[in-house]
Figure 1 (cartoon, rainbow, N blue to C red):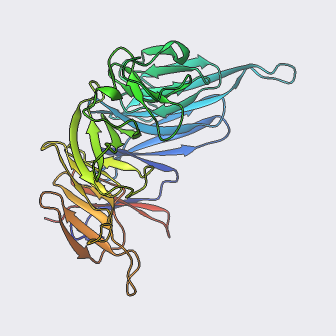
Figure 2: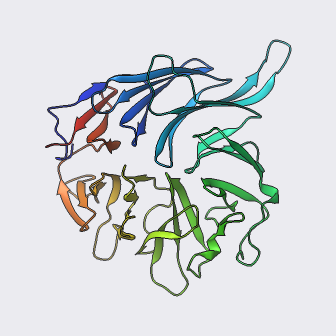
Figure 3: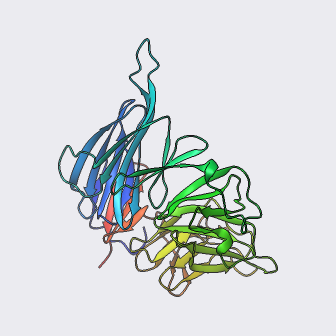
Length: 367
C-alpha cells in the first residue's frame, strides 16, 4: 500500500456485502442483500471498526443500496421495485419503495428517517444533489434525502431555451439533480445540449462549442467537457450545479481519456479527480495527465484531503501498471512500489479491500 498508511495499526472486517463510504460521517456501511425482499445495513466507525448501528430493510423485490451526500451530509438509501399484494390469483400492483437513513445513528434496529412507496416500477439513482427516480421514459421524480420531499417532472413539458439550443431534440433525458431541479440533456451521447429548466443552460457557458458532454454528478458538482471551434485542446470543467458556472477548468490534449471514467472527490471537497484529470476547486485550476507527444498517461484512482493522488502509469517492458503518487499542489508525479490503493480515504484512515480473503481493512495515516 502507499507509504501514507501505517500497516502496524488498524482494523479489519469480514462482513459480507457491499462497502458504502460515508466520507463526512467518519463511518463505512456494509449492505448485504437478503432474500428476495430484504437486506441489512451494518454501519461501522471508520476509526476502530466498531458497529455504530444496524437496520433490516424490506421492500417488494430485490433490494439495492447506495450512499449519497447532499449539502455535506451523508445518507444511506435502500430501494426495491416489484409487485405488492401479489398472490396466486392477482398480479398485484407494481411499486417502488425507498428507505432513507442519515449516516449517523445508534442501535440495533434503526428505522428509516423517510420511507417512500411510489406507484410503478421505478429506477432509483444518486443524482448528486438528491435522489433521481425514473418512473418511465418521460416522467422523473426527485427526492430530497434530508426531508423526504418529492417533486415529479414530465420531461415532455420541459422545453430547452429556444435561443441557445441548436442541437436539441424532441426527447430528453434527466441525468442529475441540482438545487434548482433536474439537469436535462438531449437523449443521445455525447449530449448535444443540457439545461436546468428555468435556471440555466449549457449555452450560457463561455464556449462556442455545440458538442458538450456531461459525465456524471459527483457529490455537489458536475463535470463537463467541450471542444471549442478553432482551438487545439479539449476543455474539462467542474460546474456549479445551481448556476452552471465554471468552478475549475483545464485544457487537455483532445481525445485523451475515456468519457465514462469514474470520478471521486476528496472528503473536504477541495480536490476532484476523473480519469486522467485532476481539479483544485479552491484555486479553480486543473491538471492533465493524459498522453501527449512528450508524456505517458497516468490514470488517477483516488485522492486525499491534502492533495495526494494515487494513480497508475503506462506499462513498460519491465513493469505492468506501475503505481505512482501525485502531489496535486505541484503536479509532481513519483513512482511508487505499492500494489493496492484505498477505495476511500477519510477521517485519517484508508479503506482497502482484500480480494483473496474478502476482507475490508482500515489502516490509519502514518504519523
